Length: 101
Image (cartoon, rainbow, N blue to C red; front, side, top):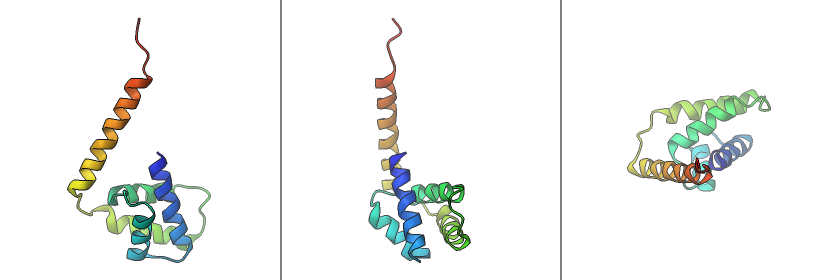
């Protein structure tokens, strides 16, 4: 969740600075180098549901970015990153579970 929040913050900061389209996407990638296109789209959707964001222009920019990159091809790196994150989550969940004795 921390990664999504960092991507979200970079996305909103870039949009507030007036960045749009590819410039905004590159800004987010620069601030969060491990962020895949899929993560950026998810953070965009999070921003669109944030009740504190009320500026129509910022919401329009974020919406356009999410739509444009929604169907981007998933690269092998993205899949490997997501698999590693899933394994980390499973390991943390297993560690948190108490034995049933």
